[in-house]
Length: 252
Image (cartoon, rainbow, N blue to C red; front, side, top):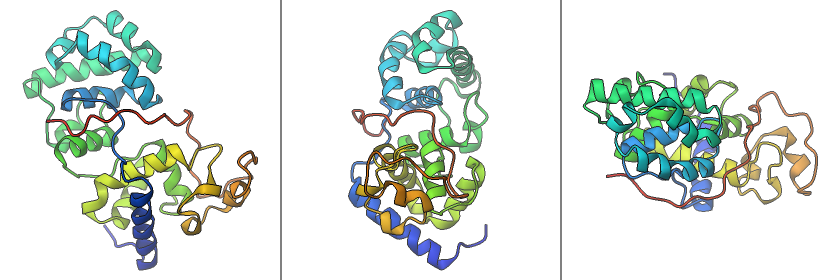
């Protein structure tokens, strides 16, 4: 992996330093008590807000408290519980198949090995990074969701618009010790300030570090309409930012 330009690396470090001061409580906003719950919740969070997932998972985990329980669940019952998260039929198949794999291949436990985790149904690099990072502090990559994708483009941290290449760019720019926090910081800022459609550039603490050409359209008036975005901008997210959810802390 080639090194990033020093100027860009320095600007990235300054961005993260400021975001840590702006969002000192940045953390995963999905509610969970263990690795199994975070794994399933993260799969459900695709194209859905964390707030909505947190409203669904208490019922889901009360009905299926362990992977072995979910592995034996009937799809219609699971679909009904998770219906409000969207794409519920596909998600029901994914989480039940994932639970079945956990039971058959890992004794019902979530593997701490990244390569084993990404082989599970419904689990990609983002989900594996979220679970291994927040549960065990294992950093094998930088989780790239729609917020990280968007901010990476606007901040000029990547010229790509696909998660794999954006992750590779970020891993070149950010020291390994900051990989886990980088995702949380960018997601927090994306939800609270750098919204997809109506970014609050007028109150952004990293405004001067942001090269996004369209930012001037939002620098003074909250109701301003965006101009055509620069080529480096990631595609807008489909969902509105989730409200802050209660934190459960790292699973044990």
